[in-house]
Length: 149
View 1 (cartoon, rainbow, N blue to C red):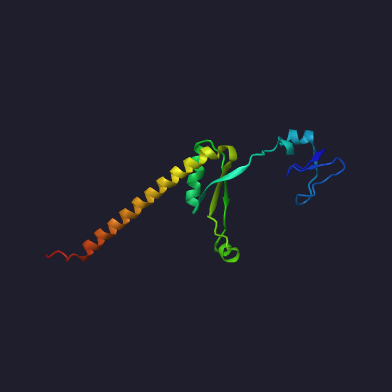
View 2: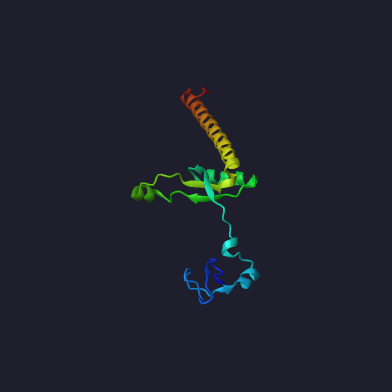
């Protein structure tokens, strides 16, 4: 068998170039694939990734990725939509980002992400309360008469 070193497709020995890749690169032998440190198709990662959470903004997605990485849980992030046009043209109302983890890690990942979401919401609520308090204080100081000289 021959293999494409770019995409990993497997071909019969009679075929010389990859029909799947742009530029139709030349195929190589199994020995050449191994010499280049490339996996053969049957050796590739076959894990199934499932949705563990979603994030409404890229900052939350980044926090989720960091949390999962610290817990040694592999993670993939996939954009659920790319912009306003998608919502208008397709009606796609998915969250911005899907957080995907291997199926066998979902039971560990989901509670971690939920706990992080609860902490972020509490922090956001505290920030809103602090901003409202600051605004009230500013209103009180601006409505008070100026000091007499």
